[in-house]
Image (tube, rainbow, N blue to C red; front, side):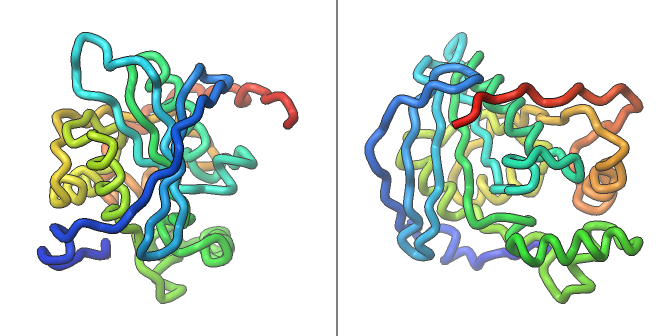
Length: 225
């Protein structure tokens, strides 16, 4: 089950600190970026924002993106994380807003090594929820308290949330962030991740259609560093 905090914990400001704001030109457009440190855990997070104001005076788009090494860096098709990251950056670049990249949330908070162990169990027939349970781990161990505090300090207290996950909306609302709209981030499913996405829809209440459609082609090639 999703970890919950007591009301006193939820409303106590979470200690975070932000660094300088710098320019970040990318394949998705020109952004500004700022690193944040969770002073309670030492984990570093990364805010990537469009320098333009939201179109038509609407609330800014915000994507809380949990770190996923396999999907974000290596382009794994076992999940939809890397493609959601690209989609969110493109949309924020067009409409304004911020993507907050949350490090330390690999595998919904269980860590990289445990995520790979869970993958092995999935290959043995368990779904993503059952695999975590077989390992004696939470289905979702993530906390959004630092994220909510970072948003507050950035002045992002009234947002349009780029997410398919209602639990993320509820937990941000508990922390004082006003969600005026949930903006879907569903990307085309693939044969390699269809069962994973079906489990998220059926067992974790994610808002997914999973319509039968052609998956997107290979992700754009990025220039070598």
